[in-house]
Image (cartoon, rainbow, N blue to C red; front, side, top):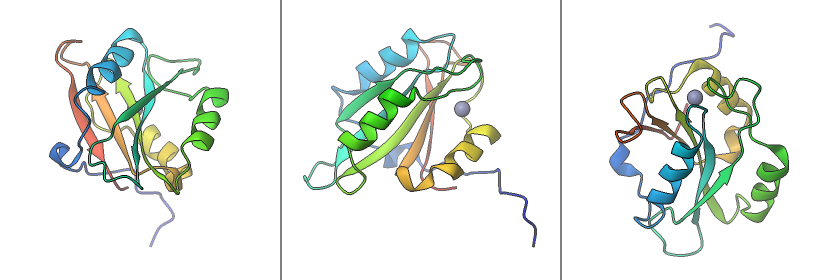
Length: 143
Ligand SMILES: [Zn+2]
């Protein structure tokens, strides 16, 4: 046994993630608008409805000092959203983009997720490595 945290995570099939078709373009537009910085936001699904799709996207500013390589969720926006969409009633997916690298979750991402694990149904990483018009995705539901 070791105390070294596991910094590998395996993606879930992207087909297991269902985003309402009308929400998807706005999410991508937000992430593209932040290029070459990482863009961030939350996808939401009401647990108490019969909604299958994640049907709301809420953008969050990235206020990291090195926003091309990392993200820091602007607390005033982020905390407000966590109260507006409490975990008891909402499935929440953290979304962020990788402007230059693959959609594989980074070691730093995993460490950040470990600190906030109870908040999230999953993480979606959107990569623009192949161009803004060719996004690729990785969806993670567990560490
Ligand atoms: Zn990342």
